[in-house]
Each structure stands twice: as structure tokens, then as C-alpha cells.
Length: 252
Image (cartoon, rainbow, N blue to C red):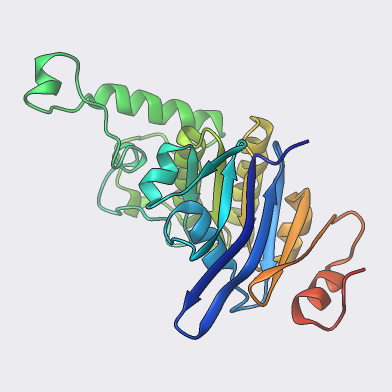
């Protein structure tokens, strides 16, 4: 089976600091791939290079067998890669529907949309409500309420629903449960599994080992700017992954 996303020999330097050192990466179709590593290992740089937030100094990236080069996150988004950042990248004062369509609003048909640039709010609200319902976010009943009135878990759910709605190829989740409690984290993990069930592969970056081992099909271990190894969580313990990350143990 060919990877849906593949990177080979990625290099990224910031002055004398080598953030990516000829890094390789593979994401298979219909899988949740965990990405773990110690602080400063280069995980964020790797994800930014894939999502278009950074341009690698060297190396190549292929999406569905086609070589790609993203100059911005918008270019990656247009190619079908959606990213949910740790900060969620949402506007608290705007409504749920407005946040879901931020930067890709639907205009009305005809002259009102073309010349007056009026938005088709009914279409956006209907679409947003449908996507939230598909992911089981039925506790959000008013699609026009401001995001700042939602709980942390609900905000994360809206961000995941937005990514699932527009991420046609794959979704990148950066620390989706970092600031959440136990109950809200459980809801987000269930959302992740629901998205996978719809056939969308997911890259999950997290420091929460129990969550990674629970939902991921494979785990990419990142160390010193490159891929150290990829393990199957069914064949390894969490202590093994920590030992690989820190250099206490070498992978076989």
C-alpha cells in the first residue's frame, strides 16, 4: 500500500540550529499516525513543513503520489490538508458558523454575491449544523452562538469538525487534548475515531502517551530532527516509546 503522504530527506535550518535533519515521513491511508518526541525534537517543524507554514530547505513531499510544494497553509488547505493547531486558530467573538467558514465564506448566488459580496448565511449555518451533528456534537444547539461561550471541549470539537468538513485528503491535529479535562478529552478522542471511520487519515501530535497508544494505528517517534523509528502500539509498551524518545534505548 502506498502512503497518501510521503516526505523524504526534509531539511530545515534556523541559523546554526538544524530542526530537521534529512527527515522521512509516511502516512498511510485510513490510519491515525501518532507523532511523538521530546521537546525540541523537531515535531512542530516537521508538521509546519507538511502543512505549508514553513518551507523546507531541502527534501521532497508527495501527496497521493504527486510531488507537492506548499508555499503557505492556504495552499496546503486547497490541496485537502486541514490542520487543527494547538491554539485552535479561531475567533472567539464570531459565531460557530462564521468560524467554520472563516476564509472560505459562501456568497449568495447571482448579482448579490457577485457585486454586493453578500454572504449566504443560511447555507453556511445549515452546513455547519450538519457537520456538527455528524460528529455527535449535539450539545451545541445554537449555531450562531459565539465561540467564546463554549467550553474547551466544545471549542476543540468545532475545530475538529471544521477540519473534518474541509479536509478531503488528511487532517493534522496538534495537541488536541493538551488543555482539556478528562471528560472533554474523551469526547475529542471519540471525535478523532469518528473522523477516521469516515476514511480520512489523521496525523496526531501529542505528549499524552495513553491517548496516543489508545487511538493510533502506528506511532512515528521523532528524535534529533529525524524519524528514529515507527512502532506498532500493540507490540510495544509506553515505557518503550519513552525510552526511544529519550535515547535510553535503541529501537531494534
